[in-house]
Amino acid sequence: VLAGECEESTDYHIFPEYGLVELIDNNGNPVSKEEGIGEIVASGFNNYVMPFIRYRTGDIAVYVKEKCSCGRNYPLLKKVEGRMQEFFVDKTGSLITFIAQDYCLWNVKDIINAYQYVQNEPGKVLLNIDAKRKFSNSDIESVKRTFMEFYSSFYIEINFVKNIPRTRSGKFRYFIQKLPIEFANYQKL
Image (cartoon, rainbow, N blue to C red; front, side, top):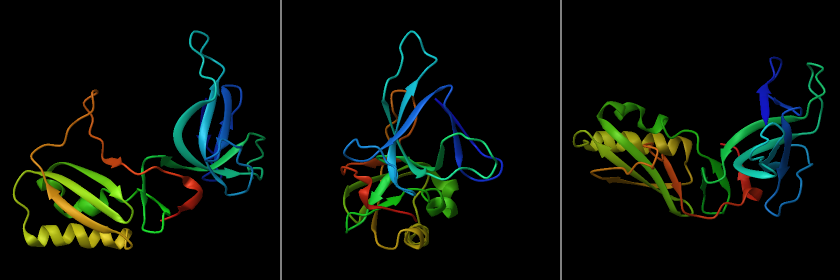
């Protein structure tokens, strides 16, 4: 399945000759409402050995019903918001896009080996930091202040650890969401 950003907008054209893309809601029903949110489900046409049929990608996107101004007649997605488990859940159960994670650490990036956000309960986020050296009180306050600029409805707790575990492929998971995600309560940051 293939999609590309249009040169005349920020929408994504889905190229149907490569596969079928569906957007489904929490109950598995097609999303057809303008600006509706759903999970991308894909069926590929080009893999004859092991075809993917209605493969749930875990990616969340915004549906666009209208036709693009560029004149192409391809289906559109307004934007891909992120992975299902990469949203913060606030105290009310609303989903908040997890996009500002690096900004919160920008002022202390030179003294961090690795970091990982973890959410175990709505409205609260734990930030684990593997630091190169001890953080000053000023460093800690800077991280908290910047986090609150983006996520004012959350409480953040900073925890210093000796190591952030990597995945089997050697990558860091920057966010671990332990709450079940339902995107009916999605909100843009």
